[in-house]
Length: 511
Image (cartoon, rainbow, N blue to C red; front, side):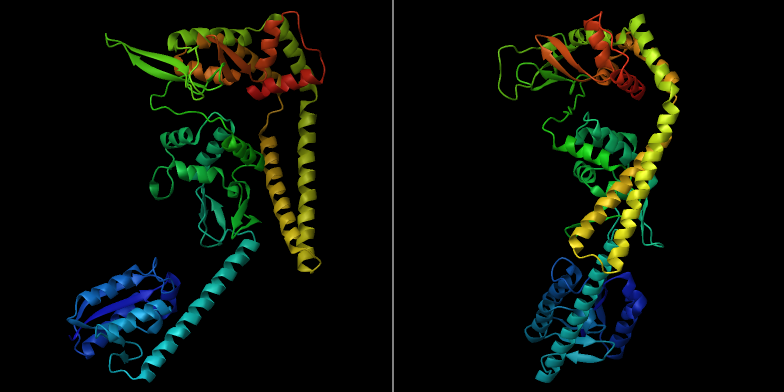
Protein backbone atom coordinates (compact mmCIF):
# COMPACT_ATOMS: atom_id res chain seq x y z
CA UNK A 1 0.00 0.00 0.00
CA UNK A 2 3.03 2.30 0.27
CA UNK A 3 3.72 2.40 -3.48
CA UNK A 4 2.70 5.46 -5.49
CA UNK A 5 1.69 6.87 -8.87
CA UNK A 6 3.17 10.16 -10.11
CA UNK A 7 1.22 12.54 -12.34
CA UNK A 8 2.93 15.69 -13.72
CA UNK A 9 1.31 18.04 -16.20
CA UNK A 10 1.68 21.26 -18.20
CA UNK A 11 -0.96 22.83 -20.43
CA UNK A 12 1.44 24.38 -22.96
CA UNK A 13 5.05 25.16 -23.78
CA UNK A 14 4.52 28.63 -22.32
CA UNK A 15 3.83 27.12 -18.89
CA UNK A 16 7.21 25.39 -18.93
CA UNK A 17 8.78 28.86 -19.14
CA UNK A 18 6.73 29.90 -16.09
CA UNK A 19 8.30 27.32 -13.77
CA UNK A 20 5.97 24.38 -14.42
CA UNK A 21 8.52 22.31 -16.33
CA UNK A 22 7.59 18.64 -16.60
CA UNK A 23 11.16 17.64 -15.71
CA UNK A 24 11.15 19.92 -12.67
CA UNK A 25 7.82 18.49 -11.47
CA UNK A 26 9.03 14.95 -12.03
CA UNK A 27 12.29 15.56 -10.14
CA UNK A 28 10.45 17.11 -7.16
CA UNK A 29 7.94 14.24 -7.17
CA UNK A 30 10.66 11.59 -7.05
CA UNK A 31 12.50 13.43 -4.25
CA UNK A 32 9.24 13.61 -2.31
CA UNK A 33 8.61 9.87 -2.80
CA UNK A 34 12.14 8.91 -1.70
CA UNK A 35 11.84 10.91 1.52
CA UNK A 36 8.61 9.07 2.39
CA UNK A 37 9.82 5.65 1.22
CA UNK A 38 7.13 5.42 -1.49
CA UNK A 39 8.39 3.57 -4.59
CA UNK A 40 6.83 5.08 -7.74
CA UNK A 41 5.21 2.32 -9.81
CA UNK A 42 4.19 4.42 -12.81
CA UNK A 43 4.53 8.02 -13.99
CA UNK A 44 2.24 10.10 -16.22
CA UNK A 45 4.19 12.98 -17.79
CA UNK A 46 1.81 14.84 -20.07
CA UNK A 47 0.88 18.12 -21.75
CA UNK A 48 -2.88 18.39 -21.47
CA UNK A 49 -5.45 20.89 -20.28
CA UNK A 50 -6.96 20.56 -16.81
CA UNK A 51 -9.99 22.63 -17.82
CA UNK A 52 -11.93 20.32 -20.15
CA UNK A 53 -13.30 17.18 -18.56
CA UNK A 54 -13.25 14.66 -21.41
CA UNK A 55 -11.40 15.31 -24.65
CA UNK A 56 -8.20 16.86 -23.24
CA UNK A 57 -7.82 14.76 -20.07
CA UNK A 58 -7.15 11.31 -21.47
CA UNK A 59 -4.00 10.76 -19.38
CA UNK A 60 -5.74 11.92 -16.19
CA UNK A 61 -8.67 9.55 -16.80
CA UNK A 62 -6.23 6.72 -17.54
CA UNK A 63 -4.41 7.42 -14.26
CA UNK A 64 -7.69 7.38 -12.30
CA UNK A 65 -8.74 4.04 -13.83
CA UNK A 66 -5.29 2.55 -13.29
CA UNK A 67 -5.40 3.57 -9.62
CA UNK A 68 -8.81 1.96 -9.15
CA UNK A 69 -7.64 -1.25 -10.82
CA UNK A 70 -4.62 -1.56 -8.47
CA UNK A 71 -5.79 -1.44 -4.82
CA UNK A 72 -2.24 -2.29 -3.68
CA UNK A 73 -1.14 1.23 -4.79
CA UNK A 74 -2.17 3.58 -2.03
CA UNK A 75 -0.67 6.95 -3.05
CA UNK A 76 -0.91 9.45 -5.89
CA UNK A 77 1.56 12.34 -6.10
CA UNK A 78 0.85 15.69 -7.82
CA UNK A 79 2.96 18.85 -7.90
CA UNK A 80 0.33 21.37 -6.72
CA UNK A 81 -3.46 21.52 -6.81
CA UNK A 82 -3.87 23.12 -10.25
CA UNK A 83 -1.51 20.50 -11.74
CA UNK A 84 -4.12 17.96 -10.60
CA UNK A 85 -7.32 19.68 -11.75
CA UNK A 86 -8.96 23.00 -12.51
CA UNK A 87 -12.56 21.79 -12.65
CA UNK A 88 -15.13 20.41 -10.22
CA UNK A 89 -15.82 17.22 -12.18
CA UNK A 90 -12.28 15.90 -11.80
CA UNK A 91 -12.18 17.06 -8.16
CA UNK A 92 -15.11 14.71 -7.49
CA UNK A 93 -13.09 11.85 -9.05
CA UNK A 94 -10.23 12.61 -6.66
CA UNK A 95 -12.60 12.69 -3.64
CA UNK A 96 -13.98 9.36 -4.85
CA UNK A 97 -10.45 7.89 -4.85
CA UNK A 98 -9.95 9.13 -1.29
CA UNK A 99 -13.26 8.11 0.23
CA UNK A 100 -14.16 4.93 -1.66
CA UNK A 101 -10.81 3.53 -2.85
CA UNK A 102 -8.76 4.59 0.21
CA UNK A 103 -6.12 6.49 -1.77
CA UNK A 104 -3.88 9.19 -0.29
CA UNK A 105 -3.30 12.31 -2.38
CA UNK A 106 0.07 14.08 -2.03
CA UNK A 107 1.19 17.51 -3.28
CA UNK A 108 4.99 17.45 -3.46
CA UNK A 109 5.56 21.21 -3.68
CA UNK A 110 3.27 22.22 -0.79
CA UNK A 111 3.78 19.01 1.27
CA UNK A 112 0.01 18.68 1.73
CA UNK A 113 -1.68 15.29 2.17
CA UNK A 114 -5.35 14.32 1.84
CA UNK A 115 -6.86 10.94 2.84
CA UNK A 116 -9.80 9.44 4.73
CA UNK A 117 -8.40 10.85 7.95
CA UNK A 118 -8.38 14.43 6.68
CA UNK A 119 -10.57 16.80 8.65
CA UNK A 120 -13.55 18.63 7.11
CA UNK A 121 -11.44 21.79 7.29
CA UNK A 122 -8.70 20.15 5.20
CA UNK A 123 -11.22 19.04 2.57
CA UNK A 124 -12.71 22.54 2.64
CA UNK A 125 -9.25 24.00 1.91
CA UNK A 126 -8.88 21.57 -1.00
CA UNK A 127 -12.21 22.83 -2.35
CA UNK A 128 -10.97 26.40 -2.07
CA UNK A 129 -7.69 25.62 -3.84
CA UNK A 130 -9.56 23.94 -6.72
CA UNK A 131 -11.94 26.91 -6.92
CA UNK A 132 -8.97 29.31 -7.08
CA UNK A 133 -7.36 27.18 -9.81
CA UNK A 134 -10.67 27.16 -11.67
CA UNK A 135 -10.91 30.97 -11.39
CA UNK A 136 -7.33 31.40 -12.65
CA UNK A 137 -8.04 29.09 -15.58
CA UNK A 138 -11.16 31.08 -16.45
CA UNK A 139 -9.18 34.32 -16.34
CA UNK A 140 -6.49 32.88 -18.57
CA UNK A 141 -9.10 31.62 -21.02
CA UNK A 142 -10.78 35.03 -21.13
CA UNK A 143 -7.46 36.82 -21.71
CA UNK A 144 -6.55 34.40 -24.49
CA UNK A 145 -9.90 34.98 -26.18
CA UNK A 146 -9.46 38.74 -25.85
CA UNK A 147 -5.98 38.46 -27.37
CA UNK A 148 -7.25 36.39 -30.29
CA UNK A 149 -10.09 38.84 -30.86
CA UNK A 150 -7.61 41.73 -30.86
CA UNK A 151 -5.49 39.94 -33.45
CA UNK A 152 -8.56 39.45 -35.64
CA UNK A 153 -9.40 43.16 -35.29
CA UNK A 154 -5.89 43.96 -36.52
CA UNK A 155 -6.33 41.72 -39.57
CA UNK A 156 -4.02 38.97 -38.25
CA UNK A 157 -5.49 35.48 -38.53
CA UNK A 158 -5.59 34.21 -34.90
CA UNK A 159 -5.28 30.51 -35.64
CA UNK A 160 -3.29 27.97 -37.61
CA UNK A 161 -2.68 29.20 -41.16
CA UNK A 162 -4.54 27.24 -43.87
CA UNK A 163 -2.74 25.31 -46.61
CA UNK A 164 -0.72 27.62 -48.83
CA UNK A 165 0.24 29.78 -45.85
CA UNK A 166 2.44 29.43 -42.78
CA UNK A 167 2.43 31.06 -39.34
CA UNK A 168 5.50 33.26 -38.87
CA UNK A 169 6.51 32.76 -35.22
CA UNK A 170 8.77 35.84 -35.23
CA UNK A 171 6.35 38.40 -36.69
CA UNK A 172 3.15 36.62 -35.49
CA UNK A 173 1.75 37.19 -38.99
CA UNK A 174 0.72 34.76 -41.73
CA UNK A 175 3.08 34.39 -44.70
CA UNK A 176 2.65 32.65 -48.04
CA UNK A 177 4.06 29.11 -48.22
CA UNK A 178 5.11 29.36 -51.86
CA UNK A 179 5.72 25.63 -52.55
CA UNK A 180 2.06 24.94 -51.68
CA UNK A 181 0.68 28.28 -52.89
CA UNK A 182 1.68 27.77 -56.52
CA UNK A 183 -0.40 24.58 -56.68
CA UNK A 184 -3.41 26.19 -54.98
CA UNK A 185 -3.38 29.18 -57.35
CA UNK A 186 -3.54 26.71 -60.22
CA UNK A 187 -6.33 24.79 -58.47
CA UNK A 188 -8.51 27.90 -58.21
CA UNK A 189 -7.81 28.85 -61.84
CA UNK A 190 -8.65 25.36 -63.13
CA UNK A 191 -11.85 25.13 -61.07
CA UNK A 192 -12.90 28.56 -62.35
CA UNK A 193 -12.91 27.19 -65.93
CA UNK A 194 -15.81 24.87 -65.08
CA UNK A 195 -14.00 21.95 -66.70
CA UNK A 196 -13.05 20.22 -63.44
CA UNK A 197 -14.90 18.54 -60.62
CA UNK A 198 -13.32 18.52 -57.16
CA UNK A 199 -12.47 14.86 -57.58
CA UNK A 200 -10.74 15.55 -60.90
CA UNK A 201 -8.85 18.46 -59.34
CA UNK A 202 -7.69 16.31 -56.41
CA UNK A 203 -6.32 13.77 -58.86
CA UNK A 204 -4.59 16.53 -60.84
CA UNK A 205 -2.95 18.03 -57.73
CA UNK A 206 -1.79 14.68 -56.39
CA UNK A 207 -0.42 13.62 -59.79
CA UNK A 208 1.40 16.97 -60.01
CA UNK A 209 3.21 16.30 -56.74
CA UNK A 210 1.27 18.56 -54.38
CA UNK A 211 1.66 17.63 -50.73
CA UNK A 212 -0.33 19.11 -47.88
CA UNK A 213 0.97 19.40 -44.32
CA UNK A 214 2.78 16.35 -42.94
CA UNK A 215 3.70 15.48 -46.55
CA UNK A 216 0.42 13.73 -47.31
CA UNK A 217 -1.72 13.89 -50.44
CA UNK A 218 -4.70 16.20 -50.41
CA UNK A 219 -8.19 14.80 -49.88
CA UNK A 220 -11.43 15.73 -51.58
CA UNK A 221 -12.97 17.20 -48.41
CA UNK A 222 -9.86 19.30 -47.75
CA UNK A 223 -9.83 20.75 -51.27
CA UNK A 224 -13.56 21.49 -51.11
CA UNK A 225 -12.98 23.50 -47.92
CA UNK A 226 -10.06 25.38 -49.51
CA UNK A 227 -12.07 26.36 -52.58
CA UNK A 228 -14.80 27.85 -50.36
CA UNK A 229 -12.44 29.63 -47.97
CA UNK A 230 -12.40 33.45 -48.46
CA UNK A 231 -8.99 33.57 -46.75
CA UNK A 232 -7.37 33.02 -50.14
CA UNK A 233 -8.64 36.34 -51.53
CA UNK A 234 -7.79 38.34 -48.41
CA UNK A 235 -10.49 38.09 -45.73
CA UNK A 236 -11.18 35.52 -43.02
CA UNK A 237 -14.04 34.35 -40.83
CA UNK A 238 -13.55 34.34 -37.06
CA UNK A 239 -16.22 33.65 -34.43
CA UNK A 240 -19.07 34.24 -36.87
CA UNK A 241 -17.69 37.51 -38.28
CA UNK A 242 -15.64 38.34 -41.35
CA UNK A 243 -12.48 40.41 -41.00
CA UNK A 244 -10.14 41.99 -43.57
CA UNK A 245 -6.83 40.15 -43.46
CA UNK A 246 -3.37 41.70 -43.45
CA UNK A 247 -1.99 38.63 -45.26
CA UNK A 248 -1.23 38.60 -48.99
CA UNK A 249 -4.04 36.99 -51.05
CA UNK A 250 -3.32 34.13 -53.45
CA UNK A 251 -6.17 34.94 -55.83
CA UNK A 252 -8.50 37.78 -56.70
CA UNK A 253 -12.05 38.16 -55.42
CA UNK A 254 -13.18 37.80 -59.05
CA UNK A 255 -11.56 34.36 -59.34
CA UNK A 256 -12.99 33.29 -55.98
CA UNK A 257 -16.52 34.33 -57.00
CA UNK A 258 -16.18 32.50 -60.30
CA UNK A 259 -15.18 29.33 -58.43
CA UNK A 260 -18.20 29.66 -56.11
CA UNK A 261 -20.51 29.88 -59.15
CA UNK A 262 -18.95 26.71 -60.55
CA UNK A 263 -19.26 24.88 -57.22
CA UNK A 264 -22.90 25.91 -56.80
CA UNK A 265 -23.81 24.99 -60.38
CA UNK A 266 -25.94 21.96 -61.16
CA UNK A 267 -23.69 20.49 -63.84
CA UNK A 268 -20.29 19.20 -62.77
CA UNK A 269 -17.66 17.29 -64.79
CA UNK A 270 -17.74 13.55 -64.23
CA UNK A 271 -14.67 11.50 -63.35
CA UNK A 272 -14.51 7.86 -64.39
CA UNK A 273 -11.91 5.36 -63.30
CA UNK A 274 -11.38 4.37 -66.97
CA UNK A 275 -10.61 8.01 -67.91
CA UNK A 276 -12.43 7.98 -71.26
CA UNK A 277 -11.21 10.77 -73.53
CA UNK A 278 -14.56 12.37 -74.39
CA UNK A 279 -16.23 12.28 -70.98
CA UNK A 280 -17.53 15.69 -69.78
CA UNK A 281 -17.69 16.92 -73.36
CA UNK A 282 -21.15 15.90 -74.61
CA UNK A 283 -24.72 16.23 -73.43
CA UNK A 284 -27.71 14.36 -74.81
CA UNK A 285 -29.83 16.46 -77.20
CA UNK A 286 -33.00 14.69 -76.05
CA UNK A 287 -32.82 14.88 -72.24
CA UNK A 288 -29.75 17.09 -71.58
CA UNK A 289 -28.04 14.37 -69.52
CA UNK A 290 -24.32 13.62 -69.78
CA UNK A 291 -22.96 11.38 -72.50
CA UNK A 292 -20.29 9.12 -71.01
CA UNK A 293 -18.02 6.35 -72.17
CA UNK A 294 -18.35 2.65 -71.53
CA UNK A 295 -15.97 -0.20 -72.28
CA UNK A 296 -17.15 -3.35 -74.04
CA UNK A 297 -15.24 -6.51 -74.88
CA UNK A 298 -16.23 -8.78 -77.74
CA UNK A 299 -15.94 -12.59 -77.64
CA UNK A 300 -12.65 -12.39 -79.56
CA UNK A 301 -11.18 -10.31 -76.68
CA UNK A 302 -11.01 -7.01 -78.56
CA UNK A 303 -11.78 -3.87 -76.52
CA UNK A 304 -14.27 -1.27 -77.75
CA UNK A 305 -15.34 2.04 -76.26
CA UNK A 306 -18.87 3.35 -76.80
CA UNK A 307 -20.48 6.59 -75.68
CA UNK A 308 -24.14 6.92 -74.70
CA UNK A 309 -26.57 8.98 -72.65
CA UNK A 310 -26.53 8.26 -68.92
CA UNK A 311 -30.37 8.17 -68.97
CA UNK A 312 -30.35 9.97 -65.60
CA UNK A 313 -33.86 11.30 -66.34
CA UNK A 314 -35.17 8.00 -67.71
CA UNK A 315 -34.54 5.97 -70.82
CA UNK A 316 -35.68 7.19 -74.22
CA UNK A 317 -36.03 5.58 -77.63
CA UNK A 318 -33.00 7.06 -79.35
CA UNK A 319 -30.26 5.46 -77.33
CA UNK A 320 -27.47 7.02 -79.38
CA UNK A 321 -24.70 4.47 -78.79
CA UNK A 322 -21.65 5.70 -80.71
CA UNK A 323 -18.23 4.08 -80.87
CA UNK A 324 -15.25 6.23 -79.93
CA UNK A 325 -13.73 5.88 -83.40
CA UNK A 326 -16.92 7.10 -85.05
CA UNK A 327 -17.26 9.94 -82.55
CA UNK A 328 -13.74 11.17 -83.33
CA UNK A 329 -14.75 11.31 -87.00
CA UNK A 330 -17.96 13.21 -86.22
CA UNK A 331 -15.94 15.84 -84.33
CA UNK A 332 -13.79 16.58 -87.38
CA UNK A 333 -16.35 18.92 -88.96
CA UNK A 334 -16.79 21.23 -85.93
CA UNK A 335 -12.99 21.59 -85.77
CA UNK A 336 -12.61 22.13 -89.52
CA UNK A 337 -15.28 24.85 -89.57
CA UNK A 338 -13.40 27.11 -87.18
CA UNK A 339 -9.80 26.33 -88.08
CA UNK A 340 -10.00 26.76 -91.85
CA UNK A 341 -9.88 30.55 -92.16
CA UNK A 342 -10.34 32.15 -95.57
CA UNK A 343 -7.87 34.70 -96.91
CA UNK A 344 -10.53 37.40 -96.66
CA UNK A 345 -11.18 36.63 -93.00
CA UNK A 346 -7.44 36.55 -92.28
CA UNK A 347 -6.98 39.99 -93.85
CA UNK A 348 -9.92 41.34 -91.84
CA UNK A 349 -8.32 40.04 -88.64
CA UNK A 350 -4.90 41.49 -89.50
CA UNK A 351 -6.49 44.85 -90.28
CA UNK A 352 -8.19 44.78 -86.91
CA UNK A 353 -4.91 43.82 -85.21
CA UNK A 354 -3.19 46.78 -86.86
CA UNK A 355 -5.86 49.20 -85.62
CA UNK A 356 -5.75 47.70 -82.19
CA UNK A 357 -1.95 47.87 -82.03
CA UNK A 358 -1.84 51.58 -82.91
CA UNK A 359 -3.17 52.67 -79.53
CA UNK A 360 -2.74 49.45 -77.52
CA UNK A 361 0.12 50.76 -75.41
CA UNK A 362 -1.74 53.96 -74.54
CA UNK A 363 -4.90 51.99 -73.70
CA UNK A 364 -2.84 49.64 -71.56
CA UNK A 365 -1.23 52.54 -69.68
CA UNK A 366 -4.59 54.27 -69.19
CA UNK A 367 -6.03 51.08 -67.74
CA UNK A 368 -3.14 50.81 -65.28
CA UNK A 369 -3.54 54.45 -64.23
CA UNK A 370 -7.29 53.92 -63.69
CA UNK A 371 -6.65 50.89 -61.48
CA UNK A 372 -3.95 52.66 -59.48
CA UNK A 373 -6.13 55.75 -59.04
CA UNK A 374 -8.99 53.61 -57.79
CA UNK A 375 -6.59 51.80 -55.44
CA UNK A 376 -5.43 55.14 -53.97
CA UNK A 377 -9.02 56.34 -53.57
CA UNK A 378 -10.10 53.21 -51.70
CA UNK A 379 -6.95 53.38 -49.53
CA UNK A 380 -7.86 56.94 -48.50
CA UNK A 381 -11.39 55.80 -47.62
CA UNK A 382 -10.04 52.96 -45.50
CA UNK A 383 -7.55 55.23 -43.72
CA UNK A 384 -10.30 57.75 -42.99
CA UNK A 385 -12.47 54.99 -41.58
CA UNK A 386 -9.61 53.92 -39.28
CA UNK A 387 -9.08 57.52 -38.14
CA UNK A 388 -12.78 58.00 -37.44
CA UNK A 389 -12.86 54.83 -35.35
CA UNK A 390 -9.81 55.93 -33.35
CA UNK A 391 -11.34 59.39 -32.79
CA UNK A 392 -14.65 57.87 -31.71
CA UNK A 393 -16.56 59.39 -34.62
CA UNK A 394 -18.09 56.08 -35.75
CA UNK A 395 -21.68 55.79 -34.55
CA UNK A 396 -22.49 52.38 -35.98
CA UNK A 397 -19.60 49.97 -35.30
CA UNK A 398 -21.28 47.13 -37.22
CA UNK A 399 -21.63 49.29 -40.32
CA UNK A 400 -18.02 50.47 -39.97
CA UNK A 401 -16.77 46.89 -39.73
CA UNK A 402 -18.76 45.91 -42.84
CA UNK A 403 -17.31 48.88 -44.78
CA UNK A 404 -13.82 47.96 -43.61
CA UNK A 405 -14.21 44.43 -44.97
CA UNK A 406 -15.61 45.87 -48.21
CA UNK A 407 -12.71 48.30 -48.65
CA UNK A 408 -10.00 45.74 -47.86
CA UNK A 409 -11.59 43.22 -50.22
CA UNK A 410 -11.72 45.84 -52.96
CA UNK A 411 -8.09 46.81 -52.32
CA UNK A 412 -6.95 43.19 -52.58
CA UNK A 413 -8.92 42.77 -55.80
CA UNK A 414 -7.45 45.97 -57.28
CA UNK A 415 -3.95 44.92 -56.25
CA UNK A 416 -4.41 41.61 -58.05
CA UNK A 417 -5.75 43.34 -61.17
CA UNK A 418 -2.82 45.78 -61.20
CA UNK A 419 -0.32 42.92 -61.01
CA UNK A 420 -2.12 41.05 -63.77
CA UNK A 421 -2.26 44.19 -65.95
CA UNK A 422 1.49 44.68 -65.57
CA UNK A 423 2.07 41.15 -66.85
CA UNK A 424 0.03 41.67 -70.04
CA UNK A 425 1.77 42.23 -73.31
CA UNK A 426 0.11 45.04 -75.29
CA UNK A 427 1.85 43.86 -78.49
CA UNK A 428 -1.42 42.69 -80.02
CA UNK A 429 -0.35 42.44 -83.63
CA UNK A 430 2.47 39.90 -83.25
CA UNK A 431 0.49 37.91 -80.70
CA UNK A 432 -2.65 37.92 -82.86
CA UNK A 433 -0.87 36.85 -86.05
CA UNK A 434 0.87 34.02 -84.19
CA UNK A 435 -2.47 32.92 -82.74
CA UNK A 436 -4.01 33.01 -86.22
CA UNK A 437 -1.28 30.71 -87.49
CA UNK A 438 -1.86 28.29 -84.62
CA UNK A 439 -5.62 28.21 -85.26
CA UNK A 440 -5.00 27.40 -88.93
CA UNK A 441 -3.07 24.32 -87.78
CA UNK A 442 -5.77 23.05 -85.40
CA UNK A 443 -7.54 20.83 -87.96
CA UNK A 444 -4.37 19.06 -89.06
CA UNK A 445 -3.33 18.70 -85.43
CA UNK A 446 -6.71 17.19 -84.59
CA UNK A 447 -6.40 14.58 -87.35
CA UNK A 448 -2.99 13.45 -86.07
CA UNK A 449 -3.81 13.57 -82.34
CA UNK A 450 -4.69 10.64 -80.06
CA UNK A 451 -8.18 10.60 -78.41
CA UNK A 452 -7.13 12.52 -75.29
CA UNK A 453 -5.28 15.17 -77.34
CA UNK A 454 -8.34 15.50 -79.58
CA UNK A 455 -10.48 16.11 -76.48
CA UNK A 456 -8.14 18.93 -75.39
CA UNK A 457 -8.55 20.63 -78.77
CA UNK A 458 -12.33 20.21 -78.66
CA UNK A 459 -12.49 21.79 -75.19
CA UNK A 460 -10.43 24.76 -76.39
CA UNK A 461 -12.85 25.68 -79.15
CA UNK A 462 -16.24 24.98 -77.51
CA UNK A 463 -17.75 25.03 -74.03
CA UNK A 464 -20.19 22.22 -74.72
CA UNK A 465 -21.33 19.80 -77.43
CA UNK A 466 -24.91 18.58 -77.73
CA UNK A 467 -25.40 15.17 -79.35
CA UNK A 468 -28.37 15.43 -81.74
CA UNK A 469 -29.09 12.39 -83.93
CA UNK A 470 -25.47 11.25 -83.74
CA UNK A 471 -24.24 14.75 -84.63
CA UNK A 472 -22.23 16.81 -82.12
CA UNK A 473 -23.45 20.42 -82.15
CA UNK A 474 -20.90 22.77 -80.52
CA UNK A 475 -21.40 25.90 -78.47
CA UNK A 476 -18.29 27.69 -79.67
CA UNK A 477 -16.14 29.87 -77.45
CA UNK A 478 -14.77 33.22 -78.62
CA UNK A 479 -13.12 33.89 -81.02
CA UNK A 480 -14.19 30.60 -82.68
CA UNK A 481 -17.85 31.64 -82.64
CA UNK A 482 -17.12 34.34 -85.21
CA UNK A 483 -15.21 31.88 -87.42
CA UNK A 484 -18.16 29.47 -87.24
CA UNK A 485 -20.58 32.24 -88.26
CA UNK A 486 -18.39 33.07 -91.23
CA UNK A 487 -18.21 29.38 -92.21
CA UNK A 488 -22.01 29.03 -92.17
CA UNK A 489 -22.49 32.25 -94.14
CA UNK A 490 -19.54 32.83 -96.53
CA UNK A 491 -20.80 36.25 -97.65
CA UNK A 492 -20.91 37.60 -94.07
CA UNK A 493 -18.02 39.66 -92.74
CA UNK A 494 -18.09 41.76 -89.54
CA UNK A 495 -17.99 45.52 -89.84
CA UNK A 496 -15.04 47.53 -88.59
CA UNK A 497 -16.69 48.75 -85.37
CA UNK A 498 -16.51 48.18 -81.62
CA UNK A 499 -17.61 44.55 -82.06
CA UNK A 500 -14.70 44.06 -84.42
CA UNK A 501 -12.34 45.36 -81.74
CA UNK A 502 -13.88 43.00 -79.16
CA UNK A 503 -13.38 39.96 -81.38
CA UNK A 504 -9.77 40.94 -82.03
CA UNK A 505 -9.21 41.17 -78.27
CA UNK A 506 -10.77 37.73 -77.84
CA UNK A 507 -8.36 36.37 -80.42
CA UNK A 508 -5.38 37.74 -78.51
CA UNK A 509 -6.80 36.47 -75.21
CA UNK A 510 -7.13 32.96 -76.71
CA UNK A 511 -3.39 32.88 -77.35
